Length: 233
Image 1: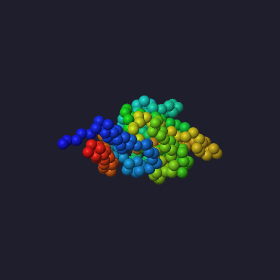
Image 2: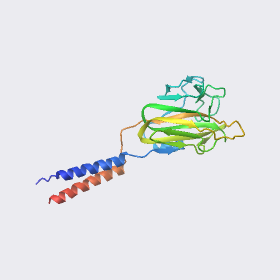
Image 3: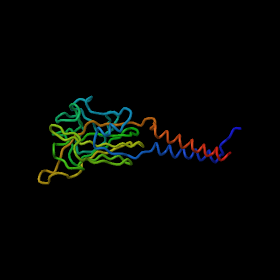
Image 4: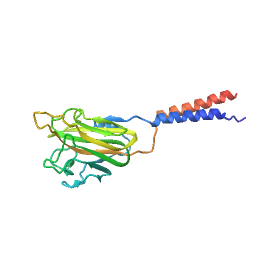
């Protein structure tokens, strides 16, 4: 004789499936101050804009895009510019300004928009060697949290490279990078200089599940079905 699950049991199994699936798929945002740690947490093929494909001296006016990232800012009369004056984390090019020294200063900030959700963002802020304090730089993605600089992730010959990164499986469409106001020696001119390089992004991919999660889900469904069969005997 064929046995059928009672409607109430079917609904219970479906509800259990949804709860377990939601628990598997949803994860909280995580922040990083190490590029290797962020890359190690990613699957798929993240994209990195290292500015090597752009000519030194080329400018990126506010509202223009490079590598799928729209850059919006208001930094006096200056325009973002590709520079190669100082050391950087990738071969020679980085993102600076068309000022005399080509750098951002404390208090400067800009917004990155991605034309759709990204699940990860990471970048390097390159500052003068030994001139900065923890928290001088911040990266914030609305709804996905923020991260501030701690100690350099990479020490260069003429600078310190701070890494800031966020992973949020739910995705975000914008992020703001900023240099804090102040944060330098008042006995000097109270300015610190910085540039940006190696902006890494990752786009959402098809949802995949860890084998252990699939086993838990299958076991739960089998258990519910077994209970239903026992009740029908």
